[in-house]
Image 1: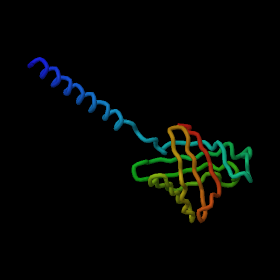
Image 2: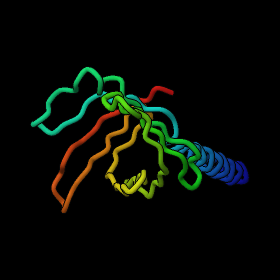
Image 3: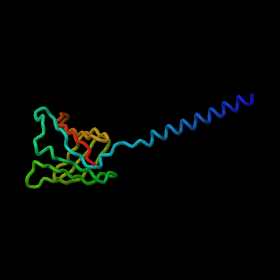
Image 4: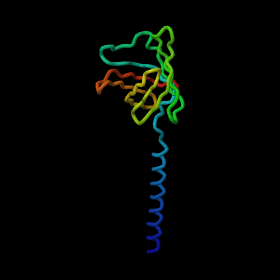
Length: 135
């Protein structure tokens, strides 16, 4: 009888240790970070189905993730001053970018390698921009 109790006690202890070990692995998984440099891949709506030659060189950079931070966009289609700077702040699936007099909020879908920014006005989608992570 003592052997049966020892066996079940050991089995319960092993099960508890295995359970705690598996939980910590789930908690160690990090959510993808927006911080880094992104290259424009495509932009929709259907009214502009493909990107122009200059837009294919556009990039967006997000730095200082903790409380938001610096934003820099290279807009290759602007000849005079192609670099747009500002600040950004992410709150859940919303991203706010402030640049000059603009204060734009986007709904985003973020994975480790892709960033989709959805711009809407009064609930109607204006465009989606898909970026691929550069670094």
